Image (cartoon, rainbow, N blue to C red; front, side, top):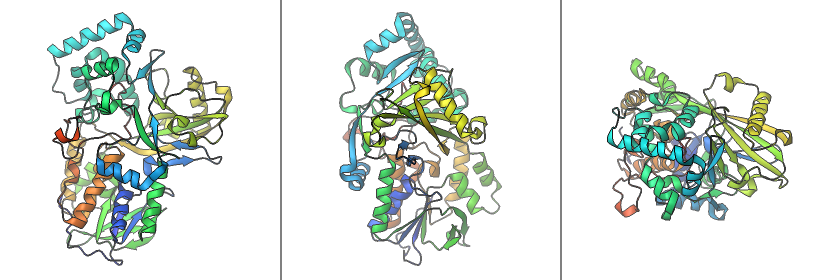
Length: 501
């Protein structure tokens, strides 16, 4: 798409307007305010952070929606994190496990633990399946199912990828595009996983197997609260409860007005982290039925966290546990004290979050909160992870449009919208939903950084190319040919043998 020109005059009367107060939008606002440019960030909710916010209940318990690790090898992102957080940025140990077949497997995998838990028969079956995959690859690797089974063998695919992935996405793996697997499971293979299981992951070279990460003392939302404060201190504005209701295009094709919260803004330039579907809907492109339909057909996966406060000590030591058991609906369970002790104000209690993946409007999404809490309590007991009778209370938090879906037709839909956007000279889309790309927070922030460069420095960064390649080299920085290397901060719900959040 065409990028904004440095000749655009940014004035208090015509500021840069940033749509969305999540990681990407706030990063853009922060860098613009830091550069002394008039900027207004518009956030629809009454709290910044988007999916990376921290929810605080009435008694001070903090809930992280999804488990957001802060780990990256993009130095400028890491520098920005530390610039904003200072000493509030903690170094935290990672511990996670996979609940499979009634057993807990350590993750990252440990060789003797795998041998003991899988047993000799399953190990032989998996090994033979992998050897078969080496000699007889199947399909054109269009689907996630083909991509993974060709690299790990059908047996390991069905044991460790299929059940969990389909629980997360709500569709068969054969309907998910291989691009998602290539983007999320790079740097890990059968042999690299086996090597790490027996000799370790020295230097954290395999991105999915890092042993420690940074984390704000009071949860990821603290990062975005601090950033909001800095924007305001430097003269910028962050306006909450200001949903965008209209994006007006002028005769020259540029954005001429933004209406949000009943107020009309006249922007010099717009940086938008709104979902592609919403950008199209709000701009109402004339005579562009194909664009409108493409936007309507984009799909998203939603999820909810059911946070339980439990009497007694922590139920388990892990940061999180992946649940592969098809007999329960829960997909992953967080232990919030393991992320940071400051998340749980009362040391005589434990606090856990059970994550359920669904589609907005389906039976689970519409279920009464009290019934959802009862479901979480029951499944906690069913997994032998806690006594339901000791649960003091529960809080349900629904997260709409959390994950852009890579279904069979998503690429063509995105390309149609991208072509239309290329005609809007002063609008740049950034972030996860803004580009309909499964970016982590670091890459969402990187797209915003590049958008600000385009605006202030006259660079011509292609924001759609950030984290777009399917092949990555997870080695040292100097030998990595990818100018926007994928790095890991808050990994998504993926097949955990390959990618743990």
